[in-house]
Image (cartoon, rainbow, N blue to C red; front, side, top):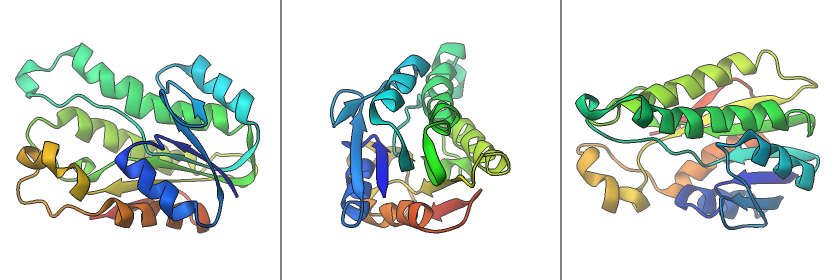
Length: 199
């Protein structure tokens, strides 16, 4: 399969590339690195990416930013970070990408454990993750030509605990390689409209 991997240089993206790259052609895409570049907050940039890459069999998004902060200090600008990047960025990858995707192609988006298990300072992440999961379940009903869509919801990663440990006390982190198995399950499986929880 020809797989477009958004966020390929990140911790999760590298693990997904290692897993799927054993069996498939990986097109690595990042904001400033990889085979191609894209800014997922800009639909014109997404369109340009697909114009260059052409048809594909699967798209994996391991990208998306949100703002972490105390609710009392959050305003529209802080919430807009996640809404424009992790939510609409991933939604637009599907909306635009579905026109280029082959029949039966799959889309796999990234959410996270905070969609169901909120933490202090994570209101934006919880909101955005839950919205992405809602989009996946709904879009699965309407994607054309047998295309599929799923999401992977990983726990905090072992490799990211140095920076995130204070926010995730009591959580049991997972290895990025284990989270990558959820993406393989989505890409290489047959289900659609699912959220694969790697907790």
